[in-house]
Image (cartoon, rainbow over all chains, first blue to last red; front, side, top):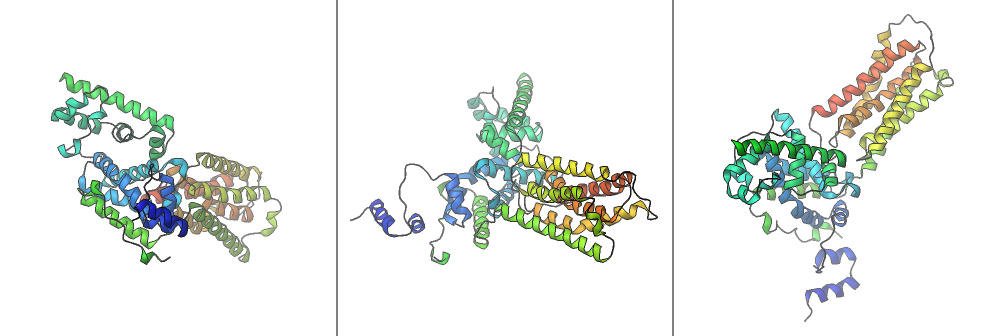
Length: 215
Length: 220
């Protein structure tokens, strides 16, 4: 009896490459790179898109929820973001990095939605949105923030008081874990400018949280 | 191989079960992918836009020549600003559409400034005319409408920045500037106020219109 890997190896010698890739699951040590998946996705490969979607959609949804603070709007924006990814995939260039490119689309869609609403994100408190906001404060003790709803609320409210460009940079860097080149790509700016935005955001957060701690 | 023979795309992975929003977005994106399986590269859009804008310019100048408004003999004395204006159209449209490429946009803006400066410099005192100055501005704006609509169509395919929209507007305004070079013999101050002023108005209108409605995609 052949194992799946042996069958796949046998098929690889006989069948077209794309057929083998599509219908067999050859176990590989490394997951397929973003650019390889993107190349297949640009050719219309739905499986490649599904892998990219599963790789990025959950974290993107979390980012959108934190950024717009409205669950329904975040879901709409997630759909808008991935429709844009599909429609505009011909504009992707490997230089920008896929993660930065997708976040750029999400950030553009969010900014536009908020601008058309004519409002900044509301300051209403939603504990469900705060589960992993604690690391946003550099000096705060994450375990304390995670266990202390007051601390989480303070971090959240401090974040909401940041100017949108600084809030974006802080969220992308500290919460989403993007590198500065990826943040620069997402915000359509230079790496230096992205660092300055994040630094100013952290400075301001520090002051706001210090005031909260003293209160 | 036909796509109909392919197995269905697997449902959302275990990490996605918790959110109906994720499943809905995935289904919508897959529907869109099935509608247009092949990506259209941005170079295709840029080339199409350049060719359409150049064709619109040629048509505007052709109609002007047919109506005896455009005087073809002026080509001889004004080939340099005209060549610069053609370059502004080509580079401006490509720079407005191309993703990334900040240096290309800076080069396109510099080229537009050089072309704008060359227009009044080539005029001197100029000829007098009984026509009011605003006739040139109005004609300039009218001639620019088709190229403006074309560039707006292309820049609204992505999340256009103000800088990119201004560049696209300048490329559209170059059509009117070419018509002005071939139809108007007045002096430099007239060119600055009524030709360059109209061109600036078109560029600003392009920036405002491009951002007035939601773009078709939010890609950078």
